[in-house]
Length: 331
Image 1 (spheres, helix red, strand yellow):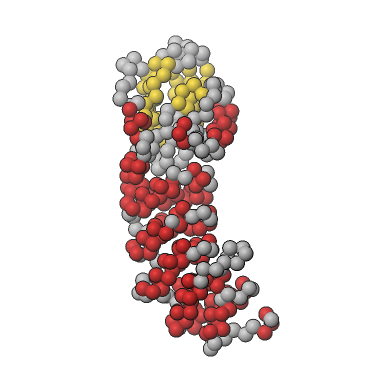
Image 2: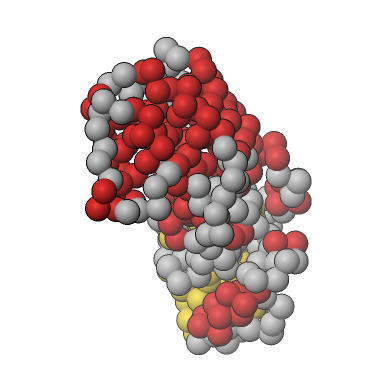
């Protein structure tokens, strides 16, 4: 059958039909010929293909996917054609993940199309490739508070933050829509009160250590400090970063063990409620989780035993790079 396929620009109906051929070579050839032909007479047929919500046993609808790219190739998605835009926007909720992803990529970055992407739910798509395309698409959008707030909602999903590609894309997107993102973190966070309360009083005799998170780096800006054994210490932790962090002080030599426990804990649905702090004797002191643009003060009595006490952030995926050493010396 394949041998006898002869696709010709003079037979647009056959080209449109070939967009659903079971051989990818012919689908792509048909798509290319339709775009090269440059005629918009086929648009109504292409819309019909995109609007067909059937999927095969692999969850695909190849014809709809190639039809979308053909509509895009015919410049019908440049903003001038209402119907084409509406068909592509509706495709954001197509049952086939590949079609949703193609719609995200093919739509123009106009306000109307951007709203379509925000409202369709693709930022929370079950398919990671589609979700990645959705997050990346916001980097190309004009800066907007609404997008920043939507991205903050995505950042609250642990599965996203534990996926290195999604987390990386989200970081880039959050820095593009920084104002809305940071605004949402202070508004939307229910625990803002609890983490702020601790910062009110620092004892007069305390040794004060100020530590900041480094934006986009998964690091603390201070990686070692020294305190007197048995003295009062107040660590003021500031978080200018786009994601949540905490700080734990652990027993000498226990960093790996606490880190592994943190990895285990991350899979537990109650992990966020306990600030991602593993419940184990090796953890000596811990701050709550702090949101972007917040700070917290952790006041404690330094250990009596001199030595190197690691400190670390145990937010999922952070502990391997986000660490430092508190050296306790005999006074």
